[in-house]
Length: 156
Image (cartoon, rainbow, N blue to C red; front, side, top):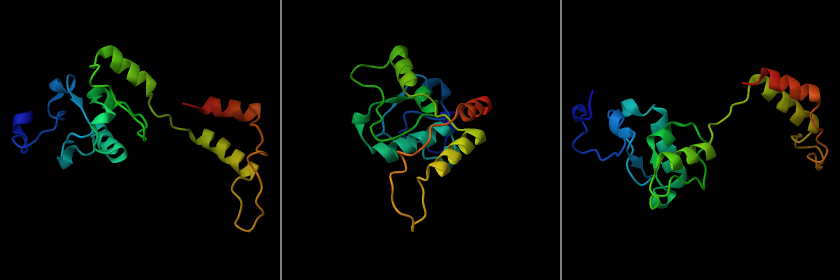
């Protein structure tokens, strides 16, 4: 399907269209611009990321521009996130620098989670409501080398 075959083609003003893969490489998107409203494309990762950026940053032009390649990367969206500066222009170099500064999210393996869960449980940070308060973080033990080695062996 091409962009002209889209039922919303005449009224749509989205700068990055999921149906137009050729222009996606050359277009930038600002958080104050529209996101593709079609429900059948709502599950695309980069469209979900656009919606999350709008939710977290609001409709601000000052947040900078985001390219399709930037939106494809699974980075953490949080307050203070800025895209490329529109006054400086975007080039492959600035985009590559932005991508390097915003690496993909890392997920913990089950073994790494188990090690962290054991450390938290052992430290006593989370106590029941009736227990006396204490500075449990000061008493948190350092992980043993065996714990670290086992978490790294099972890592990604």
